[in-house]
Image (cartoon, rainbow, N blue to C red; front, side, top):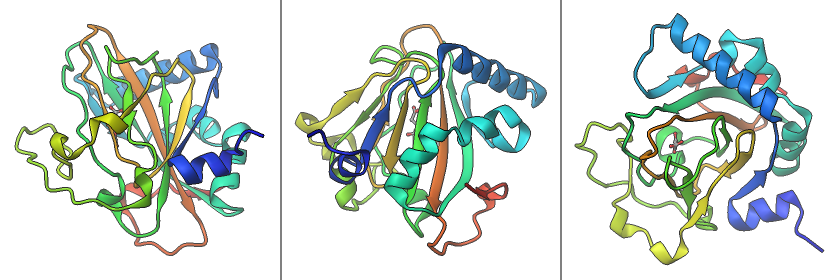
Length: 221
Ligand SMILES: O=C(O)CCC(=O)C(=O)O
């Protein structure tokens, strides 16, 4: 019998929810995200934190039943949505995100992020790559971050065993739920087209945490 979502997550540190949103729903999310960027006069690629506090469409997307059922199976009955962010790489973005574990940025209880493709993503435009099973240990983030590309906590590429790396190409509307110790990075976008992704972060509501400034609009599911 195939592993359950919880078993897959516990072994690999991630699960893929194919077609979590339809093409039409994903198109609406991308249009809404573009409207929010435009309202804030953001015109170059990067990261925009906090779509759900501005838009009921994103709030509805964050609580879509197939996703919340999967999260409850993985996390338990008490799940809290913390925040979401848009990682919007446009044609001019030719750098990938370096290898890291998200936990190095927030500490506290473990968190669970959902990476949602708003565009089809592959090796040419910056899909995610991960090391399955790497969520079982914490590693040092002492890589050189002097390139001004953010990600101040990162690993040196040569610390990654390339034979263990798995690419996670995704179609629009697919979602990847991953543990905050899963080692991940993304390829540069060399396609000349957009690669936009939405990342929503959740936690176990029974676990204490500091009052994160980035999660002011948190709510329990
Ligand atoms: O979507 C990407 O390029 C990766 C983003 C990422 O790893 C992160 O924000 O933690």
